[in-house]
Image (cartoon, rainbow, N blue to C red):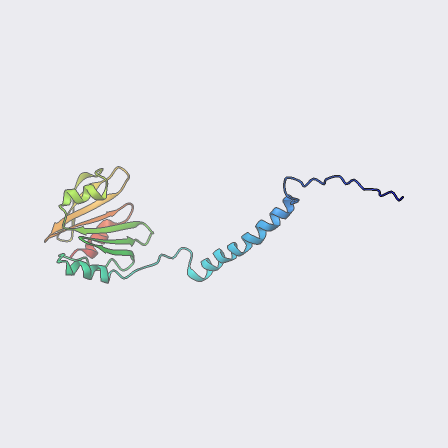
Amino acid sequence: MSTVETAQTEPTSVPATGGRTPKDMALSLGVLLIPVLLLVLGYRLFYGWDAAVTVDPANAIASAGRASFAPLPAAAPADWQTVTAKWEPGVLRIGYLDPDNNGARLVQSRTALDALVKDELDGKAQADGETVVGTVTWQRFRAPDGQTVLARTAGNTTTLLIGQGADLTGLAAAVAR
């Protein structure tokens, strides 16, 4: 009779990391991060990282005109950029950047002046006198967060210019008709 010997094998244990070392993980992350960094750098090189995307507000202003808003805003000063323009039923909104990249926005509505200022600044603006720009008198408001508002009602339209750090009087001189 022959004896058959059976070999007893000990179970091998797999490390909790699945056999991956920190070096393997670093290489995997590098393979993922390199294309992402190349995409970001390519975007910056070819599309201008810091350049604002400008829009033409003509369609939004024309929509406000069809809704009988008057007076409609004129073009912003030459060195300002128009970055948003939107007509929502009853409200015209145009966003601007001044040459120092400070933002300002124009809001026009048929809402009463005090109610519109309250809505746009969460009821936190306080009256702060008047500002005369050319022949137009604007009411001035200040908000606790540093925003300034120039407001006026002309015709059937209330116009607000809202900004922080931007030259709102220069904007008012350009857009007021």
